[in-house]
Amino acid sequence: MRLNENTLLLGKKVVLVPYTAEHVPRYHEWMRSEELRRLTASEPLTLEQEHSMQRSWREDADKCTFIVLDAEKWQARPSTTEESCMAGDVNLFLTDLGDPSLGEIEVMIAEPSCRRRGFGTEAVIMMMSYGVTKLGLTKFEAKIGQGNEPSIRMFQKLHFEQVAVSSVFQEVTLRLTMNERERQWLLEQTSHVEERCYGDGSLESQ
Image (cartoon, rainbow, N blue to C red):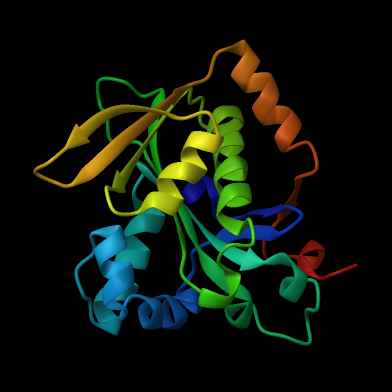
């Protein structure tokens, strides 16, 4: 999605930046992990295929992707590269043609040292806020493998409720509808988030 190609979102623990060609080599390394492919229901791709996928996601109007960076490492820039700050990714898929207000959300914290530190929770909240304020979304779904208990618990803490279980795909579907109370809660949770223009001088640490 080109809407977010110049958007950087700065939170307390994570920074969200557009998925660019610079990020592909590290992303490709992550996806060589059988565990991550199992948790994300992904097929192994070559580096060339990964680059092609990155370009496709950038152009597709129904996919919004941010790379999740470790904010503490990112603040040390320019003494460190952006690639070395990468922690994972967060995505919104707008694939329900009958309901443009529904977004399927998923998050992956791929870097082992970044897990169990609240990165996934903040990334999801920031992405939901972006979906509500920029994309006009009012409903979110998360489809998670039945064995991925930490992810299921995280979404439940964010007010998602289980609405379906698929024994065929071995996944659980959770949903959150943004009524006014939930919207206010979300905006409060993200009141600290700063939006900057990605790729200009504001990207440098102050």
